[in-house]
Length: 325
Image (cartoon, rainbow, N blue to C red; front, side, top):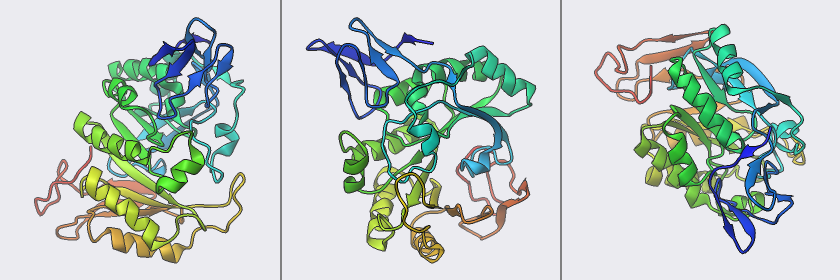
């Protein structure tokens, strides 16, 4: 289903897309880098509104969200394509597809599915959800009216204008910071690492719950020097209470280096804990528990059933814990 796109303008007979930092200048009869936004010569239209590649009811911890309604479930959905081109993409079978031949699911139908499945919320994930921008605005608006929480797992490469528009209906976002400037030169049309970090800060300013992911890819950013760049970004643009998920990479798509060293991941976690309150290692089998950074008391247990041992958002010692519980 094609609908008129948001966030674009005409310049020199081209449509300039302002949805993400690629800022594609699209000739008539062509699509942008993501393939989802097409210029017909008069207006920019979306080719993927409601075109869904996957729908699954999943726990928030898998995404991963560790401080956003632990133990709850969200009806998780996706389309195809991406606005970045990572050679190691873990969901390449969705992100590299540009044909948009999935099933059409209208916003009302998707929200009704979430209610029927007794989901606590809706989450856009699997591929880059920014590609579904217009659809997200409609789905999340309906979800909020039904009392459902809304979230997305994103690379954070959308423009501030897009993020601000989403903020009216978006409760939480997980932003995957890929690495340093060299990595963004490799995977994007125009390197804008600072823009991603600024979006982390903007989310906090807008009242959107935010958690940061960093995938450590073997042979690319698996050095302490590279990882310290992530910590500098957390220090400058986030807050010490924002959760950081250090995730393990596995060979996928065009990248065949061996999985990330678990030993390095745990060393990185210990380094990060010197300045951050909540640091987790992901994709190593099982989920990590959450402990109070003040007294060390177990706050959230993640062994099968998720158990929260807090009074509201406070530890028994009085420490306030970032998140929504």
